Length: 544
Ligand SMILES: Cc1cc2nc3c(=O)[nH]c(=O)nc-3n(C[C@H](O)[C@H](O)[C@H](O)COP(=O)(O)OP(=O)(O)OC[C@H]3O[C@@H](n4cnc5c(N)ncnc54)[C@H](O)[C@@H]3O)c2cc1C
Image (tube, rainbow, N blue to C red; front, top):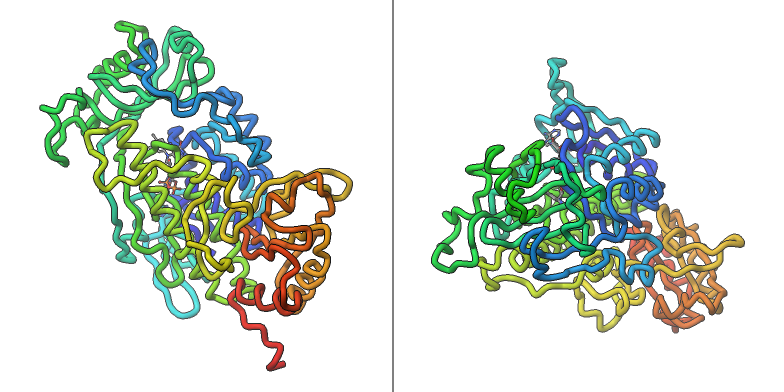
């Protein structure tokens, strides 16, 4: 396997492929990992995936070194000014009902080296200063031309499949002629990295210190302050008073959406001071990064043997903190499918489900980031063509997969998201977290998933367990099966089944199939047909 791009999503892809035992080479044209913090807000689902990858404790430790664990997200006139709105008073309020993990603030430049080291430890090959210059596909694989950017010339490598995690300007996507669709460029934004000679935290007077949106006549954007209160960055999306209707004219000539045009150190200082709300406050500008806020989705996530993941597939404004998270979750969805197909466990049809599942979720997420951009930063864009806001739990752990790798129940409306309190193990949704007994200790159900399929049956569901093990053996599909004989855990209720029912969970923790009770047909037949269809294989009983 070849991965193009060795930033957040490329490294996550390499790591997940190795966790599934797939050989992979990731190439990255930069010298190292991210130099700027960028992504900082990591969702429950992502932290759950990092937990599976053995990184949760270290990520949490690094997060706490820099940020307050339960900081919130609000909107203020300035750090010293009035609070306009509070989006999350506490980032982790209510999460224990749904997950054994926490939402975390950790910067991309801190997280990426952890992903890199863990994937190297597991045997991934990572090569920096190497650019993928061309890809040619045929029926059996892809030939990639790799250029050594330090003068070492070009080489070719052959891969079964390629994952293009090469960012929002994805050269791979361009070469494949895959167009982006959506709202386009929303603003030419800047991120200003600064240091303050005084502690800024007291200005907030105990209000949220996680992400602070700023809305005033000078700018609109957001702060992320370190827990020390004397360092951080300010994102500036818009400049000028966009609340005044007379200056709001037709986009794209909107001058207020071009903060990057006139930025220099002096201007950055003015903006930071206006956002802090204290004139002449002693602040030092350390760096300025220019970037575009864009809300677009790729029209397809796959071309033959090449898959798009991360910003290459969907580019969204940072509002809501969805971009990097969605990319890591793309990689997690794709890695097991590639592993199963490469090892012959699944038929190639399984790979079609990546586009079916992730593109719909990617489009939803782009629209939800756009909604948050408009409502929190750029109301002048208006609500026409804007989705209603979907709550964060439904986006981060409530997205549903609709594809041939899920067996829908009768009456399933194919909804793309559902609050985890409602979905209760409905096929296509993330398998719920419940603490259950296992080997003498209590573990989260989430800790049982990751490699193969997992069947979880209620106390009276032993027939499902036996049938699933038999079917897996026959089809050569890795599968573990547990009977959860523990009414106190609330397992059956959480999964929406009776004690005689069962749920079948995919390696990526998505419920693939569920029997609410013992079922009408023979469990052996049901399990064989179900498993065969989930891995895009025919059950060949009659022909053997
Ligand atoms: C200010 C800001 C705040 C953000 N906050 C959040 C947040 O809180 N939460 C969140 O989830 N997301 C956030 N994001 C978004 C997040 O940073 C991106 O979604 C994430 O970086 C995407 O990762 P990626 O690996 O897909 O792409 P990139 O990070 O763009 O990486 C692509 C890599 O591919 C390499 N590459 C490109 N072409 C080639 C080639 N031909 N050969 C070899 N290498 C190549 C590039 O050098 C690059 O390193 C934020 C973004 C910004 C700007």
